[in-house]
Image (cartoon, rainbow over the protein chains, first blue to last red):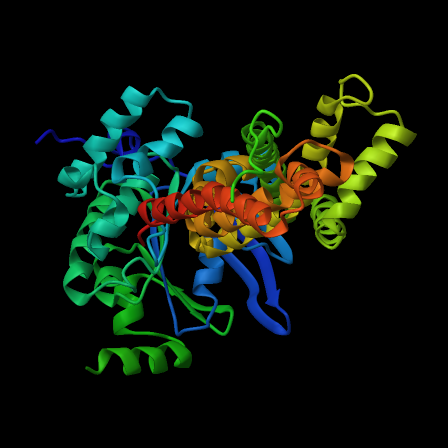
Length: 261
Length: 224
């Protein structure tokens, strides 16, 4: 197999330093519920940040706010130095640079696997069909579903669908990848195949923001762990420090509940 | 008993052909307008949503006969809108009737398509937006193709209702099946056989449509 990199552009060049995603005093309410409270977070180029925390702590909302699938009430988000536009063409252009992987895969049900992966490059990046298909097949091979290219999503297992979804996001050659609980809807035996693809991406230097409950992945792949509770960032630390020696009581409580078994 | 059926005198096939033409042109027009209205009703622009909603509520709740007569009396006779046909001709009446049917039927198409849009999981549109597709691209490439597949059967109902509704065009003198039937009943005084004949004619038009589209509906359904 050819050694096509998942992230060609990042693997070749040394990742330039600098802040890629910056959240500055971000607030959001769902009615009376204050889901994001004064969130300040900076993600540097090439960094893998894992966001963990109990349900309802605002992790997913934070992740979705970064490409404006959720609007924010106040504060500012910028990606690669550009503030997130409100709506329209500018927002679409920016979203094209931000890959997103969803909990429920969200592959286009009426399109084949190959069409799912080539749609963005053809319609948004204006690539030729031949180029887009060549790149798509290489990516599908790389995530291990190359032989499923002509099937429809419903014919694939959950793990396969999620790997296609990762390939679909990578086909846009994004600057940063957002993962919103990518393994939460998967059967246990399919979780690893998805995590392995993500591990590989992390090793290749992709900038990643991962909301997950997979503590093993956080430990081994993350540069930084962000612990959220009740809409706030409670603790931000190196993964080893966080898991072995959490500072806040809230984090200690959370870890004691999930690591017992 | 079918001695009333003098095909030299009564252009039975011609009349049903007009019915078919009324149906086909109106169906095409209302599919287009109905889809546009549905797009308006889900658009992020409040003015468009308001317009779509108002249009649907006004015309869906207006009796069809009123709309068709208004097309003839108001548009043609009062405002002089002749739909690019010679005044008073059958062509003018035909076109005005198609206009009326499109105005009316598009509201039902809109609501069927909108219900189809609601069957498409919101994640499909989110994934498309996350790729950087515009609202129009998300709608035409991802949402509407899936929406249409799920509403083939309801749209078939609208189409069948439209086929039968075309009889209202008789009210403004379009020489379709219902007008001929009225004429024949007056001339021949054989109400039951003539009415049965025309009812049968409409069954011939609508039954295959329903069966065919019912089968199509199953074939194109999106598997999730």
